[in-house]
Image (cartoon, rainbow, N blue to C red; front, side, top):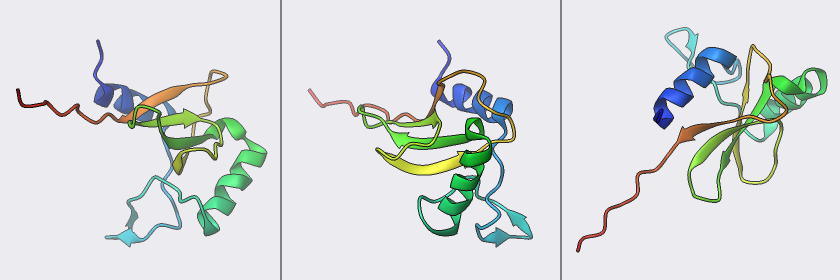
Length: 107
């Protein structure tokens, strides 16, 4: 079974999220690839969604408490957005962004 980090790396390599040009720069480079859910970031996300909705992805918290990147523009449980260079190839696709380890209970 492929671990979630490898799945995230594969998603990143395949779809190539763009850097947020509105994020703060460090050493002359944009370091943030997520877009906020408000303000100029959200305006940009919506403008991309209007022209090429398959390039918009939403970072959501799943029912299990883990974080996932879900294709499309979503409002429920959203945390951030991604815009990718390459469009989603399927009608719906999801990739794990962060899977929290279950805490072991002391016996």
